[in-house]
Length: 204
Length: 311
Image (tube, rainbow over the protein chains, first blue to last red):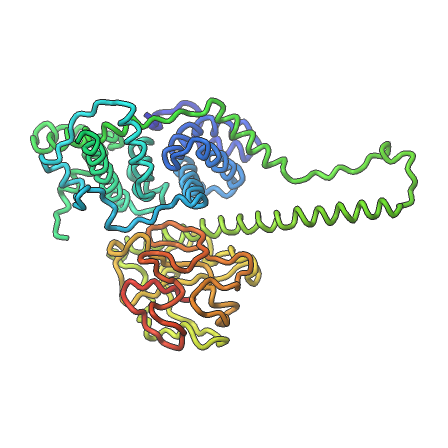
C-alpha cells in the first residue's frame, strides 16, 4: 500500500519552509519522504520504468525551482502530485503515445454495452469470480491500466494505489469533487469490463 | 438522467470504504449499514472482487531513486557555463600583443558558440514557454470547470455568434468578439491563476499574446460535451497582431515562424502542443468553420459541435 499514513517529524510544509530558509537537507528529506510514492504513481501512469524515473527527476527539479512560489494556503503533497501528473501527461504526449478517445469508447464492454458501476455492482450476471493471481493476469492488469484514458487512469491511480481521499484527488487534478467521483466510478467500471472481457477471452 | 442520487452516494461510500480512503468518523456508521443490508453486502463483495486484480500491478522502486533525483537537481544547478578567467600564471611568458592566429581562433570560437548555443538556447526557451503556456492553459481549464460547477453545469457563454464580427476580410483589423474568456474573467474564476495570456509564441509582441476561444452557438452544459472538445488555444494562426494573415485557408500558417503550432486546451482539462489545426472530436478544424473556404463576416458556426476558436 502506498498510502500516506501517519508520519513522524516535521510536516512537509515545515520542511519546505526550512529549505527556503537555506537548509538543503530539508529538501532532501522531502525527496526521501515522497520519491517512492511519486515514482509509483508516475510509473503506472506512463507505463515505463525508465521514463518514469526521468519524469520523477523533472518533477522534483520543478519543485526545487518553484518552491519560493508555493502557495502557502495549499498542502505540499497535492501540489507535488499536481506537478507529477502534469509532467507525466506532457511526457506521454511528447512521445506521441496519447490515444484519441471518444466518449462512446470509454467503456470496453465487449459487445459495445455501456454499464455504469452501479449497474455492474447490481447485476448478478456481471458477478466477477475470485481472482487467482498469475503472472499472466498481472500482465493483463498492467495492460488495461496502461491503456485507460488518461483522465480515468489518473483518478484510479491516485484513489486506489495512492489511497488519496476524493477531496485530495480533486486538489491534485484541479477538478471538482463531483468530477472525481464520477471519473472514479467510470474508471472502476472501465477496468471491470475490460478485465472481464480479457479474462473471458483467455478462457474461451 | 432521472437516476436518483442516493444509490450513487452509496456507491461513493462503498468505493471509499474499499479504497481505504473513507473518513474515519463515517466508517462505523457505514459498517453498520453494511451489516444490515444484504444487497449492499453483495455489492460490496462484487466491488472487492473487481478491485482485487489491481493489487497485482506492482512497481519496483529504483534502488538509488532519491540519489538520482538529487544528482539531477545538482547537475541542473551546475549547468550554466562557468567562465573561468585565464590565470596570470597561464598568461606568463606570452606576448601581450594579439596575433592573427589568436584573433581567428577567437572568432571561430565565437562562431561555434553562437552556432551551437543560440539555437539550443532558443529551442530551450521555446520549450520552456510552451510548458508555461500549458500550465496556464490547465489553470484556465480548472477555471472553466469551477465556473460550470457554480452555474448548474453551464460553461461561460459569450453571446450568440451571429453578432460576433470575429473575422473580416484579409488584412482587416479585428473587432472585439464576445468571448467565453471575458465572461470567465468577469465572473472571478481564474482570478488567482496566471494571467489570461500565453507566452508560447516567442515572436509575439512583448513575448505574450492573447488566447483564441470557443464561442458556443448556445449555452452548453459541460457534462454533455466530449472531454476532447477544444475550447481555448493560444493565437489563431490566421491572425497576426490583430490583422488577418494572408494565408487564411485554415491550416497552420507560418505566422509563428519555427514555432508553428498552438497550445490547445480541451474541455476535459488537458493541454497540449498541436501543430495541426485538425484536432478534437471528429478531427474538427479549430480555426475554420466547417465547410467554409473563405471567411467574410458574421458566419454562424455550422453546428453545435463545431469547435471554432475565435481570437
